[in-house]
Length: 319
Image 1 (tube, rainbow, N blue to C red):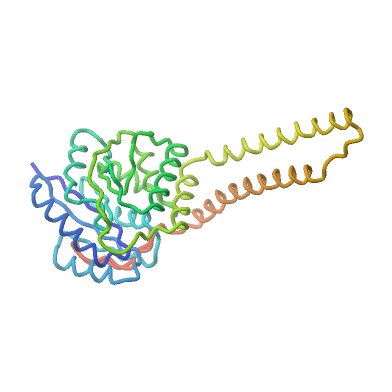
Image 2: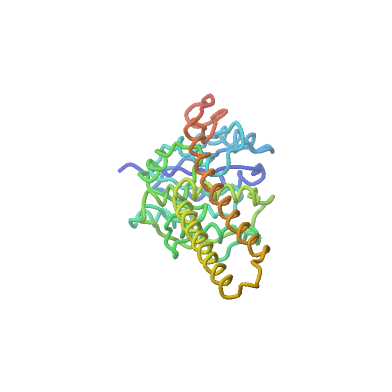
């Protein structure tokens, strides 16, 4: 009976000091799991430090490692998609480059797949992120539940394992704004959680700024949900209803108390409120149209400068 191959995909950014330890932990964990073979795909998202030099060194030391160097910074989810295109294994495992996601507990995720799940996400009882990241995670979880239909009891993290068919479904997505969680939820609902430890960050700090988190949320709900447009429609109906009722109130008030002047401030408040809602709705529609325009112009998810390690080194490619 042939062994199943586990493909680890790790997006790397400012991880020159940590990625070597993550790879060592994967190698040690997989050495103890003789039922599986493995490969490691490290994607350098145009990191400004020596991350790719470290990746190149790791590729020379271990023939199971493939390094992908992106031409510019495309973001974590685009880097994951770049790694997905290099996967040859039967099982996909994604984790972080900073050592906070415990690679030595990958067996728990693999056991979940063996027990019939299509995707298994790591769940952390105690997260070792700063307050800003924890707030962003809560907002992201709300968005996933409301916009994409994620079950409320399902914990989503960057550490997960998936069956090959889920990977194949994700690879069918070729537009410029990938959102891996949305792709997973679109592919299957047979998703489970397993509890693992979440560690302190070994070096550096998170690369997620408020701007990057905001971009990620926009990618999620504009690429995989039409609910924002429905909300805009309902808001427009609500504003029209409020304006109509206020107009009736003004007419009745004029007839009942003729000497009371109609307030200019009330009129301006109504105009500003309705105008603001219109601008918000137009902006939402413009966001959708703009992203459609970018996708129609075949903007790439990522551009690969070079691929090293694995079976052979390759020149750059665009996807």
